[in-house]
Image (cartoon, rainbow, N blue to C red; front, side, top):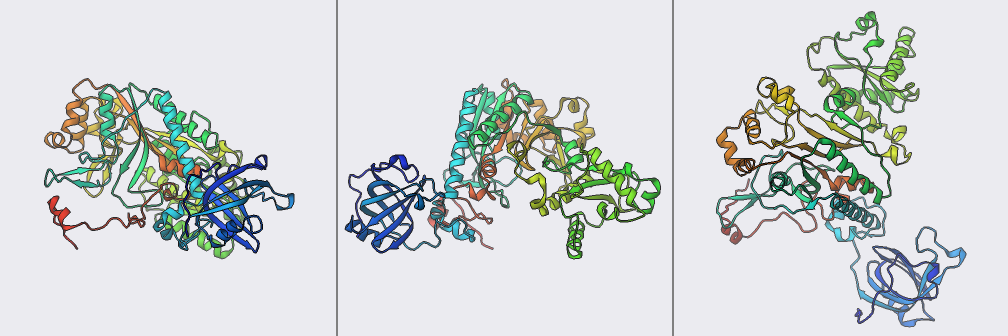
Length: 610
């Protein structure tokens, strides 16, 4: 029979008692983590958010309590009242924070029982993720998950405090708004009051935060919920949270300093130290040095080693003239078995495709004809990467176009992007052996970077038109506007846009915004949008721009992604309380689901099924 709590009050949690508390009368409450029955003695490990405490039920001292303990099973909710006792030296459990004490209980209440759970929260690892998501309330009891949400709470609080102290107001923006183009599909909400019309859930608070700047708020922030209907991965969820901010009259440096400040505060509360200011790199520099716009600075950059080749060697090795010869430093695996080498070559061929050839410099070293070339490549790669030398335990690959496959006039960036893709694939493969990924202290663990001057436009192969690379409210460089490149050379137009990158992961994006209506309309026209269409879709915003809009800019960083990194989690699902699967399904509440015909009629909706 279950007990009532009555007037009992918890005096301590399950993680705070220590030998200094010995002799105190206490009451603790929580879940049974484990139960061990030794006859006259029953040991219950009692768990709550704060830790685990061992409770001892001695049949001679408390017959009633011992009888209750015989009924208790894992995940029963119990209340134990008794005295703190210091453990003897040979029974101390050094793996538990409370391992120096135990509670000798004189009373035990069973407040609720539990079915046999599909998995035990006492387990450190549970392989079936679908089972974890279906029984999320059990999964969240696990200490690892409790730790993740402690990190999340501390990070969010640190960000709020930092931005508040910097003069930012926290302002909430609407969840139900109008659909605007922001790069992904909107989640739509039908209106009952206005049949046939829809609200959209915000992909970001973009227009609202700009309107707050027009409103004279000066500095705004929000830990904002955002929604995107897109295909999901480990680092994507249909609903997510971002640290969103905007400020008036800023230079990029003001935004960089603010972000660096709250990131340092967030890392401090997580027990990590980072140094600011962060290094900066333009988009073009990032592509040429790393082949990607979110470089991982823990790895050496790509480098052109064409200078190492003589004219005769270029001809004999069939290397295309006039194009870079890119060297990639690859961690570990200098000596390979035939099977390993075959897999290595297949990985390279699969990644770069038929247009590019590669040379393995470590194998060239063993060739009488090419040993001198291998040494020159090694020296050129080291010099261009800013290294004293390429460590001999690291493999060195040289990548170049196969003769006749690319015209010299082709954009070299394509070649660097291919090399960057290969570099990342091989770095992941050999990560366990690569010194760059070893723990050396916070300064080396976390390599931040600002990437600036992104292209304003990108070419859409499907529609054969230019589209915005960031979003249509990003300001182009003044020099590009004045030079007329918007019409004459869209590909050359640079955006006043910037990304914050950490260890090869994009944490957030931002930009200086367009604050003049004439420039905003010019951008819409450049995107192929007529004045009528722009007015229909953004009329309220274009009108607001006419009322003394100040220069402004901002940024949004993914809170979920930041916490994922700080908690050492492998997926966003580990730091979101109630996440969706890769198919956007909530297994716990079984959503989405059909709704009743009555609800559909009220919304004037008739579903069509495939």
